[in-house]
Structures are given as structure tokens and as C-alpha cells.
Image 1 (cartoon, rainbow, N blue to C red):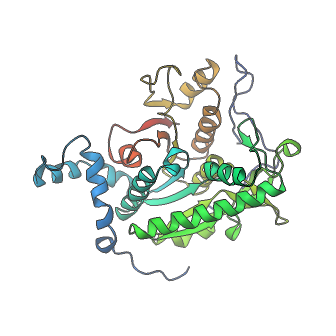
Image 2 (cartoon, rainbow, N blue to C red):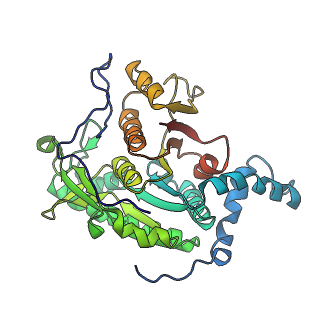
Image 3 (tube, rainbow, N blue to C red):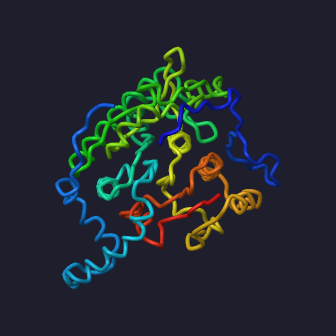
Length: 345
């Protein structure tokens, strides 16, 4: 059962770990009738996705039908574990810009939905926003990793995210899923408030509250909500919301089993200069130590902070995974290997 409306503190705390030895810190703040879902009719377009990831490195031509069935059967414990559970996925970065990676993400989402997982798909659109700003001769500006959003930029953000949202909905529907496009504005799903740094950032918002009631009939009927990270305040003023933050807060409000952030990096690295030093699993205490030691820095800090905040609000596990890997979502959910770093409470 989905949580009731969640109201976040009026004052937006910005740091979970203050006063670390290196000064680093990351954020923390304590029915419509629907057609019956027919997996047999909807899933054939994506069944090959599961075989593709579970049999990666094995040529289909050299693999017998029996072997392929055995490989697929290895996913059963993971399907049983997550069936009926809510998984919130934040989509962006390289996986959004590459047609091949986008196709694999869409296929993964539909397959996971077909086997009974309740998928909520949250997206931004940073690369596309930058492209359109460039076409209009507007130079993107950022402060501490957040886009400076004046009134003209806010209009472009809204238009681009609307287009991205409907494109994703169309792709999911084409692949055999049933997607419904929303933004934080729809049904007051996300209510925004100005950032404390509004004088610098403009219309960049914090999240004041989440009301997930709009999502109830969708996820209950195996639909896939596709949510653009735009929201409005009580007066109707629109704000640009960080998509990682939106995904994390939605995961908490929905009491999700798992939050997954698709990124352009392998995950959390023990040594930032060594791509082979991936940390496969770490708890909150371990993450805090890595921040204090400077092993987690830069753009990874807000992503980790988003995960920690979600865990503190009841999300079971969170993962930061490599969206550059084909079928990274299936690798993360349907295998024991994973595709990045899992953070646990």
C-alpha cells in the first residue's frame, strides 16, 4: 500500500555529514478501470533481453535451446524476490543519449514489469536541455552541479522534459509495456519550494512534499509511470527538480524495495583513479567513512546522499549502476553480480 502524502521539512537541510575532515558532505533530510494485463501478449518483444544479459558472452548460435532455458531459469530466485515489489529507476546520462543503450533500458524496464515488478521510471533530460539551449544561443550555467535556471531556461526545461517524457512513454508502449507519462506537477505528485540558493540558482526547487496517490491505480495495475522531474509550488510556479532527488523522494514515499540510479560511472570506486576498484556493496557507515576520506567526492556526493536519505526513510536497498553497460538493469536485479555499487542501511 502506498504511503500517504509525505511532507518534507520546511527548512531544507543540505548536509547529512557536516564537518568532515575534508569538508565534504552530502544531503540528508530527516481508480480508473484498466485493461487486464496480459503478459503473454506483451512480453515476447523483451524476453530476448533476459537471455541477452544472462547469457552475455555466449553466442546464441553456439548455445543450445536447453542451455538458454537453464540460463533463464537462474533468474527465478531474483524474480521471486522482487515480484510485486516497487523499484524506482532514475534514468539519464549516457543511457539517454545512445539509441542502443536506450533500447536496452526500455527492454529491461518492460521485461521487469512483465515478470511482476512494479517499476516507476523517473527521468531528467540534462543533455537534451543543453542541446536546445545551445541552439538558442544560451550558455548553460551550473553552480555546485545544479543548473542555473532563469525564466527563459525554465521554459526550455519544461518543453524539453515534456518531449523526453512522451518519447519514453511511446518507446515503452512500443516494446510491449503500458507507460503513463507524468510530471511532478500532475496530481500534485511533487510540490516544490524555492531552493535556499534561489538568488544564485533561479527556478531550481527543493521538494516540499510528495503525494503518491496519483501513482496508486497505475502501479496497482502494472502500468509504468514515467515521471519528468519538473514540479510546481503552491502558487503554480514551476521549478526544475534534480532528477536523482526526485527519484529518491518518490522511492521513500512509495516504500520502494529498491532505488536504482543509472549513471555514467561504474559505481563507487575505492580509488577514484582506478576503474577496477569498484566497491560492490557498502553500508551507510562505510559510505560515511569514504566521504570523510575523500574517496567519494564531486558529483558522486549528491548521488550517494540521495541513496542514504532514501535508506533512512525506509527504502530497502539502493544502487548506483553503470548505465553505459547494455542491460545494466537486468544485471543489477536478475543476477548476483550486479552492475555497480549497492548501498544498504
